[in-house]
Each structure stands twice: as C-alpha cells, then as structure tokens.
Amino acid sequence: MRRICDYALVGDCHSAALVGRDGSIDWACFPRFDAPAVFCRILDVNRGGSFRVAPEGPFTSSRAYLEDSNVLATTFTTPRGVLEVVDCMPVFRGGASGTHVGTRHALLRRVRCLSGEVHALVEVAPRFEYGAFAPRIRQTSWRTVEVVGGADALWVSSSRALAQAENAAHARWPLRAGEEAWVEVAWTPSFVERSAADAPDLVDFRQRLDDTLAFWRAWIARCAYTGEHAREVRRSALTLKALTYAPTGALVAAPTTSLPEEPGGSRNWDYRFTWLRDASLTLISLLVLGYRDEADAFRHWLRRTSAGRAEDVQIMYGIEGHRLLPEVELTHLEGHGGARPVRIGNGAVKQLQLDVPGELLEATWLYARAGGPVTPSNWAFLSGLVEEVCRDWRSPDQGLWEIRDEPRHFVHSKLYCWVALDRALRLAGSLGLPAPLERWAREREALRRYLLECAADGWFPQARGSTSADASTLLIPAVGFLPVAHPLVRRTVEEVRARLGADGLLYRYHAPDGLAGGEGAFLLCSFWLVDVLVHDGRRDEAEALLSRLLSLANDVGLYAEEAIPHSGEALGNFPQAFTHMALVSSCAQLSAVRAVSAPVSAEQPRDFAEFALEHLLSRRSWREPLTPGVPASVEQLVRE
Image 1 (cartoon, rainbow, N blue to C red):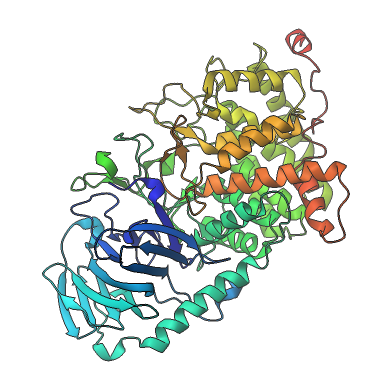
Image 2 (cartoon, rainbow, N blue to C red):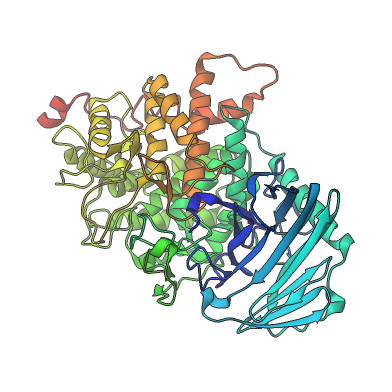
C-alpha cells in the first residue's frame, strides 16, 4: 500500500489526479473533481484501477515539479539507465488568464531516456465509477485504444505501439539515451464517437505540454509575495489554484474522498466540494498574494449559487452550485489501507454551522479594504446573513468541526457570529451602506458578553459549560475580539497546548463528537498557534513550530489535512486546501510582523508589506480589541 504522502498532484483547474512515486496514477476523476473516479487504486489496490508508467525491473525514484508549475517530473534510476516521466493535465494555450473556456480532460505523460538504455512499461487499467466494473477495451490502431463503460470513455493514444489486453492497454518500449515516447489518456462521454484519425500526433503532444507549462508560469508570475519562505508559499499558491474549478470559481477542500484520518479508521469523508468557510479563508490567502481575479470569481460563484437569498445559504455546495450531496457508502471498495467505509457525498451539507456568515463577512471586509467593490446586491445579501445571525446565534450548532452529535454552544461559532456583526458594522460605517446600526450594535454587545461569560474559569473552552479545550479558540485574537496579550487569551493558549499538544503539534479537540475512532493532529490548528506566538512576541517559538510544520510537507511540498504527531505520517484527504491556506497566512503574518521593525528595501514592493500589516491585522487587532469595554483581567471579568 502506498502512503498518502507518496503522491503528487497534477491538475487542470477542472479536475485532478494523484501520481505515486512509482509512476502509477492511482486517483483521477473526469471531467470534474467530483465526478466518479476512473482510477482509484488509492482506495482499493485490487479493484481500483491505475495508469502506470515506469521502467522495467528494479529502480529508485526522485521527483520534483518543473519550475513554477504543476507539471511533475519523476526520475527513475535503474542499473541500466535513467528514465524520466513528465506528467501533466493539459490546458489550452492562452488560458493564462484563468478563464479556462475549455480543456481536453486528459492525462499526458512524456517518457524520456536520459542515459543508458531502459525499457519503459505502460499499463492503462481504468475501472470506471469508482472501480464498480471493468470496462470494454478495443484496439483501434497500432497506437490507439478505446476504453468504454457506462457513461465514460477513455481514448489512449501514444507515439509508439500499444497492445490490448483483457482489462488494460499496455506497452513495453525500449528507449536509448535521448529517445522519448508519449502517451495520453483523454476522457469523453461514452456516447461520443472517435476514431484513430482523431489521435494527436507528436506535435500535438509537445504543444500541449508547452502550453500547460506556459499557463502555470504565467499564473504564478502574478504572485506578489516576497516575504518569508517564498518557495513554500508559491508552491501552496499553485496547489490552491489547482484546486479551483475554473468554470465557476469554486474551490474544493481537497481533490480526494475517504483518505482516512486514522490508519484503518472510519472517519473517511468526501472533500471534493466547496465549503464556504474553506473557500473564504483560502481566497483571503490568494488575495494576500495579489490574486484579485480569483476573489472576484468566487464572489460571482457565491452570488449565483445562493441566488442572493441569505436564508438559503448552505455550508457547502457542489462545485457547479448543486445543493444535494447525498452521502453514500461504496461497499465494494476495501478503503485506503483497509479504512472503511469509503464514502461519496457528504451528509454534513444540511448542518447548522453558525460561523459561516462570519467567515463570509470577514472575507468581504478584507476584500473591500483591498479595493474590491461591494455592490448594492452584495450588501443586500450580506445584510441578510447578518439578520440570520441575529436570529440564530443563541441556538446550538454542529460547529466548524461538523460533529455528528447533539448540537452545542461552541465558542468558535459564537465568536464568528460576533465577527459577522462587527464586520457588517464596519462595512456599513466605512462605505455608507444602509443598515440598522443600533440594533446590530446591541446584538454585537450581547455576543461580546456571552463570549466573556464562557470564559468564567479564566480561559475559553470548546463550548459554553464545557471543560474541554478546542484549538479553534486560538482565533480569538486573530479576529480582534481580545488582544493576544490579554490574560484570557494567554491562559487559553496554555490550556490548548497542554490539553491538545503532542510532539509539538495540536489536535483539534478530544471531546466526544458522535463518531467512533480517532484522528491525527490537525495541521491547520498548529499554524493558528504559529500566528498567536508570532504576535505575542514569542518569535523563536513561532519560528521553531513553523519549521516543524514546513518539514511535514512531502517531497514535492504538499500537505494532507492531518499528521501522526510522533512520525509526521500524513493522514486525511490530500492535498488539503485548508493546510496550504494556513501556510500562506502564517508565513505572511511572520513577514508582516518583521516588516514593522525592518525598513522595506528598495527592491521589495511596499504594497505587500502594507497589505499584510493592515489586512492580516498584525498591527492593531492582535494587540487591541476592536470592540471597547473588554475587561482587562480575569478578576474584572468575574466581577462583571
């Protein structure tokens, strides 16, 4: 069984595939992220299907993305020579604007002998609809094979001879130094007729690779980041872009389903959808990096998806805006490492999660401060969200961790209800927008007092009346509710680290949540701790933790959702947008704080440092509460 960290991502901003260190593509969905997988060996070694290109015989391998791209190069070293395989999902020439009006929906692989003589082995063994059945395979010419089954068809084309087997297309190509071969697997609906005459030639193959490299390099060239750990930040930015569904601007939480949060465990979920919380925070990260186009596209997607009605907003949607995401167990799959059940769809879609309006208002506030427009229709929608908060904030909910248990009065949920009201008041005041300011201010004050009462024991627990810690309370100073040096915040940080820490990383919580089994340390939470330490003046601790987190990337710079603390082994869906977003934010926070005391060089644009200082809130709200009347000590809070 391949480990989760053994994979690299390739994508075309419509879908994605995972490529193993051994040259096997073990996960791919066409034509969209959330379509049924055509290769899913990652979820079942025997039934899942794969697309493998590797040398014959023993080898060692190393790999890296080609510079400034999501095009992967894997180098195989054998006793007889060295073979390189370059993998991509092609995009159209001229697509650097990000519009992606079309794509071929394909996997393209270039096989080149770098030295000596190597026999390259190719096996294309699709298993459509998550390995539900073996398709029909038919050879249509000496270099083309048709694979058909159900709603899907794959067309295998190469520059050298292919052969047909019962359940696969395969080849064995002898290559000497300097020689190369190409193989492409392109998807179409099964009703589309194609013939060998439609197969691309060598010029087509080369042009598609060149166009794809040009697309990624043009996109990352617009990155404005010049701060700490720029190489890791740029890789995260490229990953986040690859997780964006270009036709709508939606962003998936991850391109996979059911990679387990515990080895052999049952906490296996489908992440190929757009959570408003995840997308909002990720797009803030892209905004910090200078990508206004992505923020604009997401705003348009949200407006169209919600139809402008605040009362109809869900916590998540399909990438094309569909609302029904029924959760189904695929009982025919054994799961990654035996982790069952394998699920598609997500039953959390109809949960009440009260923090979502606050996440959207926070994103809008930062977007507006960066120069983005807030139109009358946008404001009508946002005002409706605020009214929903005023109506519902006193209710319990399932929280951002989506517990499948009785609802609770989560501190994080109430905190973001406060954020929704606070940012709405600030938007209305700064832009002169119509709003019931006095009523919203009263509700904000009621939330402030409610939250402070939750900390009656001198720190903020997971929920009102709870004695359990929750890493999400680390966000209290980040949103400006209390300054980072406040005794309540410092005590909360101490409790979170003491109760949830393990080998320097943090778990989300240890409280019951209605689910069996456990999970790994949640990397997002550890990045939140980095931010708190940075702004509390504990920079050495922050930098040590950040270095530890950066070391948990796999060999090509990708992160899963979670990790086993003592070993760093990756767990959960992969790669995870939330983790890459947090990396961008933490590195920018560190850079912003350093910029306070260091003059900006003539070579470094001031706009990045100024934006990070203002819009990541490093200069003010981490140190001062945004709302007056906060008690200065625990004793004063108790007296109140």
